[in-house]
Image (cartoon, rainbow, N blue to C red; front, side, top):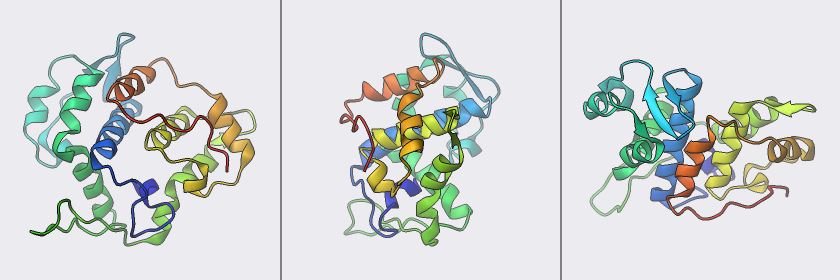
Length: 200
């Protein structure tokens, strides 16, 4: 989520919280996939490899029952994104890490106010991409992150990336067949098309 604050640590570059929630939900599934907590079938069906608990979603007890049955990726997005559940979960991770302030809610606010405590955290996405791309290719987690950034409508300029070779590798490396169903389901949620190329 720090990518949202790439140019200003106090003002998010993307203000559509529904859109953010679906992209963050997709990236949570990516995270669980690389942690070997879920399997993704060729048809996009997601199966939990172990037991999920309430602690996985900030004491959300319903995740235990939801994760018991194989479900399509779209169903997982539909579970994680509504009410901005995924945003709250990931933001709390940043709070626990000491780089973000707790959400501020008020009667006159239509949505929670979120702010980073560490300005350098806004560069995490850029630094991760830069360190996980070489002249011969990009790691699949980096490619997944890049696709998530683009799904938010952000590009290299928003991340302040000025490394053409890195961007070319990210654009040239396709998602793995395991991850593609996640982003297909995300695309089915009517998100706006991200820029084809992110070069400044």
